[in-house]
Amino acid sequence: MKKQIAELRREVSRLNRALSEQAEEAVETAHGWYDSAADRASRAAKQLRSQAQSVSETVQQNPGTISTAAMLGGFVGVLIGLTIARSVEPQPNWFHRRWHD
Image (cartoon, rainbow, N blue to C red):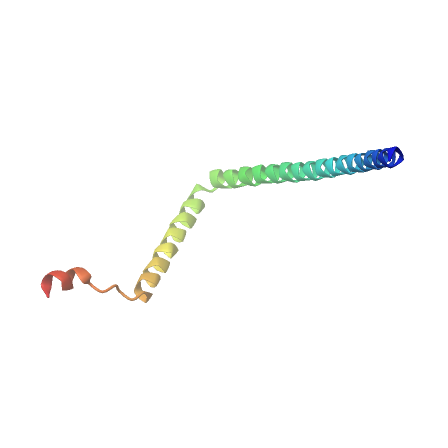
């Protein structure tokens, strides 16, 4: 019986060491993923800043062009809205039927 208990203790000790090693590997892998994601996020932020600065410079250099583009975009939006409004069937006039029938 004592021999079996000692053998079970050794087995539990081996399992604990194996679990500890696996946990260390998982932590190292997670650190690698985190570092990789942080690097990608940093590069993306730098690129976005660069693009925003480029757009800002373009707007400062060409204010008339940007205003024209904004007005044209608004006009196209209004045309799309009118087209959609005409293609939708009107709702029945419930107010008229309720009070005038």
